[in-house]
Image 1 (cartoon, one colour):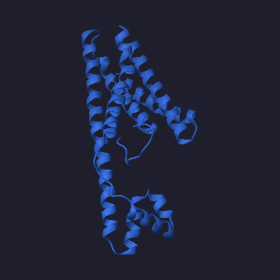
Image 2: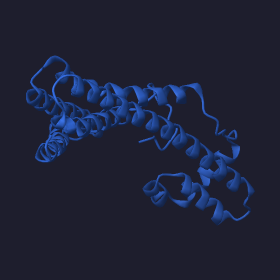
Image 3: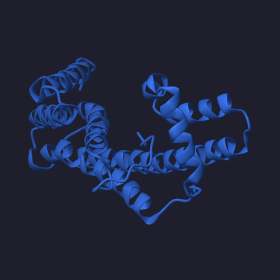
Image 4: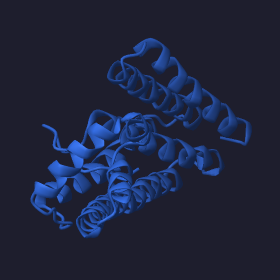
Length: 217
């Protein structure tokens, strides 16, 4: 789930990244708590709750590392493309390097005049660096924090309820609610219908919950 590009925004993670990390964490926790039905109430459930938290911690750490790797690879790609652009003497090949640096549809739609103007701008630009910055590490920590934080609404019912079945149903409902809210945020960000996006994401959550329950969750 690491970002593809190095974007300068007001926040370390953009809305899509924040929401998808939370949804990812909720799904991970939901699939893990599905195994609670085979546990005996009491100490065994508490042990499994800690295991669920540890599982999301491990996945959050993995996702954070992949986030940094994605940034590093994308920046190195930009450096390589600029070096190739500066080294080539073939105008058509230079235009292709510029198109490759653009999003696919934008590169295909851009006229030769636009590509040539971009090429001149790139040749005059300061050479980019592929190093990671403190802001990038802050983003990685944000990824880790969001995945782990998404675990807590899913496991809280098991802390406050001694009825294992009730706790599982409440946990599933909270997971679905989390995905509905995440879906509405994605819908708003995409300029679509927040309600429709929310219902789609909730539908995914309900489907997963049904599968888990049918398997003994």
